[in-house]
Amino acid sequence: MISKDEDSDCYHDYVPDFVEANGYLPIECRDCYKALIFWTFSQYNVKKFTELLKVLPVSIHGKYNDDVVVFYFKDKAKMLNFLEILSDKMIEFGIEGGIQWRASGRYWQNAFPHFFESAKALKPIRVKNEISMKDWLIKKSAYH
Image 1 (cartoon, helix red, strand yellow):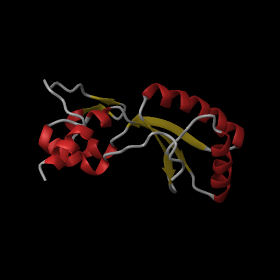
Image 2 (image 1 turned 180 degrees about the vertical axis):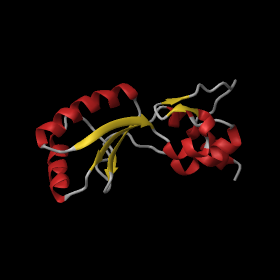
Image 3 (image 1 turned 90 degrees about the horizontal axis):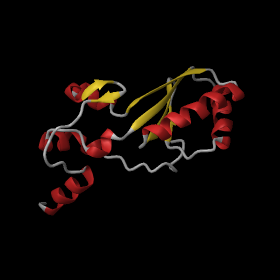
């Protein structure tokens, strides 16, 4: 885990049940984005990356492994602004890697491809009365 500063309520574990019950991705999932760094994992990159994190002028939430660094955002404009900062900082700190972004939900794209136009765009949801994941969980717990 990189940081928990970015508001990070995530309903990952509940999405399949929500989709089965309601027929669409939750509102909360449609506003999530990932900023990605594809990198070569090395002690040098981890050391430089740790230094970079200390000077970022924005609040972030994310994780990293041998192949990729993932930052989570609940606002596309904020994420795109972050990518500009990140690109400059990666050059400044000598971190090699490619930057990319996508709509969050790679797992949901595999399970529910009909909700996605592409990795960067979801298809519009057309239902009369939507319920948020938060409200659905409250309603669901009231029946148990």
